[in-house]
Image (cartoon, rainbow, N blue to C red; front, side):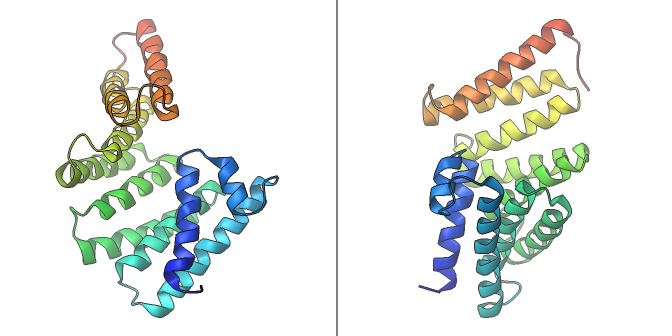
Length: 213
């Protein structure tokens, strides 16, 4: 099936598996279990195909085109093309704001993705602003107990940690840990990762209790 939705479903599955850390399943899906870069190249081709077909079939301002740009940006970021990812996400965010409004969950997701890119570019202040906006939208639309809110708490906590505000980082990571434990169970890999992050922050705070931005 060559429809834009079939193409997107394959590429979206790749992105979901990557976000979940299921790298082995990604390589199985791409029929390339041995070569990471080759796998990313194949994934990029799927995302580019989805974007091309969507752009030809729909208007440039269609929310689905914005979603395809956002998905492709995720692959570019993994490949180290931060500038390319930033350009795509900037376009995706502008389109999503025009068509969906600032409070839509998809806009929050694009903002969160863009925050990771600007963080990689060293702009921690902008990453913080984007993540706070994303978090506010997700809480408003989905409720504070939603797993996506936990992810945003975690990402914002990591930015706070990089900025040296360990006390704020601890509050956010603890929120992510509590929500993850409630939604996923205490033994889930994501929850264990948050527990490790919290332990690391506690270790740093024990050295410098007044460490704050």
